[in-house]
Structure formats: structure tokens, C-alpha cells
Image (tube, rainbow, N blue to C red; front, side):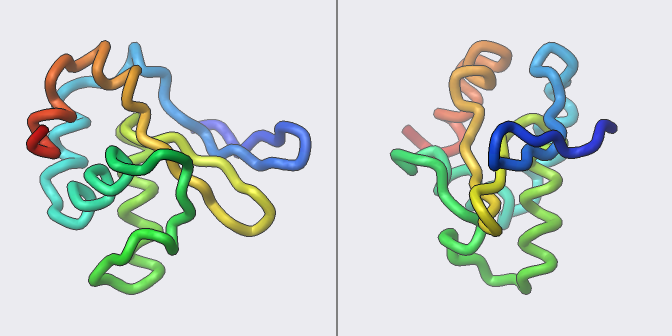
Length: 108
């Protein structure tokens, strides 16, 4: 895995290329209900949201773990703005790689 890179004033953690992501990786990331909740919230979000914006029934360190699993599975894209880690669902890329998966997950 590569190290975080800087773009201007932002730090960006490494993200997998969508072409290397397998359905198995995505499904393993989505097996956890907390991660499914995060994906559902990001699906509804109109803009990037910080980790703390999504209310979760877990500790901060456990939430960080869940966000990292989602990023490493290729489901979300993260970047820092100041000290806030911002998150966005890789909706278009996931829809292209796995058509209908996100809609089925969020029930829309």
C-alpha cells in the first residue's frame, strides 16, 4: 500500500484502483452493519462528510477502523481538510464496476 499523498493543503490516503477491486472484497466490507450504515449515509449525502458527522454506535477508534475498511475495499474516497477526514462514496465507479449493488444495498 502506498503512503498518503499531499495535494495542495490536503492529505489523501491511498485508494485502490477501481479496476483491481473484486466483488468479494466489496461484499466482505459490507458484511458489517456499521459499514453498511456508513455507506447508506454517504449514499444520501449531497457532499463529502467528515467521519464524525455520521452517528455510529461504536467508539471513535472503531469507527476509524470501519472507514478504513471501506476505503481499502474501494467503496469510499477520503481526504483531509485541516484535521477533518472527509468521506465520499465512490458511487459512479462502484455503479460502473458492480451495477445495481449500491441501489440494492440502500433499498432504492
